[in-house]
Length: 82
Image 1 (cartoon, rainbow, N blue to C red):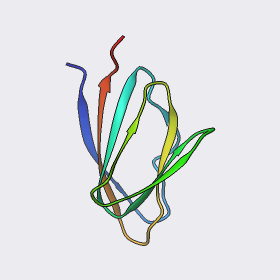
Image 2 (image 1 turned 45 degrees about the vertical axis):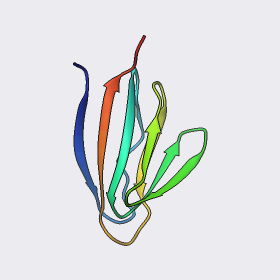
Image 3 (image 1 turned 135 degrees about the vertical axis):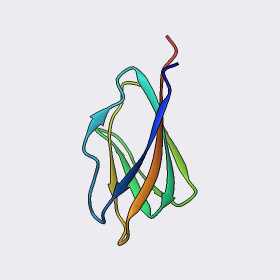
């Protein structure tokens, strides 16, 4: 199985850095704080506790903590169907 997940903790005004989903799709689920997901060359989405965002395969993106407290979120990635 190609699914994996993890917990990310970001201090205020920090980001995880630009990265690409490659052949994977990603789900980001906000546990605490406020996040902005930036699709590089595209849209920005703001999310708060209890919200989730889907990032499709082959998408460069970044997750930023736009709040004044710690951002905590879970990511789940799985290989996209061919």
